[in-house]
Image (tube, rainbow, N blue to C red):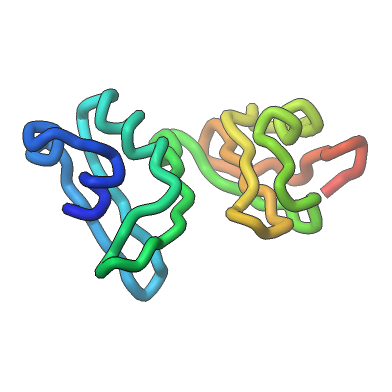
Length: 127
């Protein structure tokens, strides 16, 4: 937590109200906090130092509890979330968020509700 706290410039009080869960096998770190200010600071982190080595990271906000995730493959890498949302059409569940998974060509879509629609249109193509 110290490396993330330093990268996010968290105060001792902000650190005290945050809980870190690490999963080295998945290269995943999750931080729980009830403070919006801490959340914003953490979401702004692009890298942190671990044993004097800079580690690049991509921070994401957790999906809402009443939601589910779907993926589209072969979407051009580095497509912005705004562009993704403007080109998606869902045939069932409303789309809450769309983002690329890191630097891959995989688009992660967060749908409202507990099911993924049968298909989604992206740039007028059915997936």
